[in-house]
Length: 228
Length: 228
Image: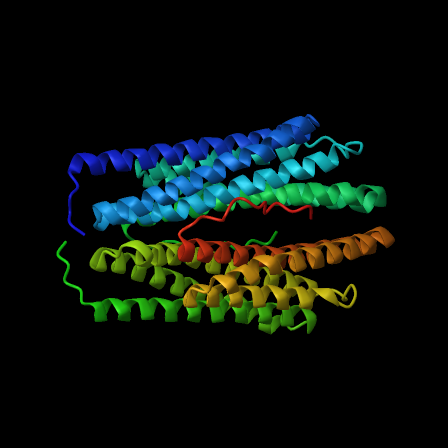
């Protein structure tokens, strides 16, 4: 294939890619926040909106994949540009799955909204907030190629894991106290687990950013398998 | 970058890629089987082997990523070859996460092996077997570009979901029966959920294979968000 591109066209492609990824990131962050609001404010119509909005995330995934393939085919990027595009191809999958997790939280919220609430959700909204911040920070790190920010995400994950464990143990206590709590507590456990997984996706993105910038793979010296 | 490749060298690269992906697939299938054996036969040393073997999966991930980037840089593939390489880049992430899930199952098995068993695990090994078959079939579909096989994987996922729901409800019943069962049943619930997620990863791979072959994206008309 002949190299017909100009630097200018290539730069425009990369700008488009960054913009689309940021738009997709903002979308999934919003879905996390809304799914949590649907839970804590017992707002099932809002949960339904989250479920419906997932198609926008999915559309963005397909568009970004296509854009990456087009850039690879037409611009034949090398070195750091090639790493940028191949990283974007992977990051988009993480973002799409974060969207799926938010939808799943919204669906569980709809079920929980049919029955009396188990207890105040004290730490769960906090966990959602942290997970959302991690996603935002990881994507910002990608777009600006900022390794220091990516490393903040990696360090921040311990906080999410600790909070998940705290919520998990509290829910276990509710279950032991009264068997009538078991079904609701189990649903809340899965919601907390989904939030913790959103944090893991943010960490995956951050690890890829470090690799993209440094050209050195840091994905696997540390274990991502947590005691939970 | 000059086009210095011959068809022969390119063909060899693609063969290497397929072989490495199959090797990685065989490795993660084996980890699923061994983590389940560690649970049902209460074999903690085997669980430790699964945890240790994850580094081989991770090494293969890095190697395959590098190979894909090298092929993109040196061979500048177009059309269906480009789709093959960009799909491989995504599939390798799914395989790596399947490995992580098997490690997580092994870790939970080690905890469960410290206490008396809750009950026979009747359906859990069956769920593991189905998940493993789905992974194998999805990867075979990728390597042979076989859409019919990929569609079998997509159709097969309902069976996994139904089995997960059955296990989930049985474990809920154990929890309601006796609060002493709660902690162990919760651990088993997460193990079953991990197996169901392995099935989801296989489905993701299968969807990408259909796209790769047909050039048409089928990833998002159907919902992957299940009632669980």
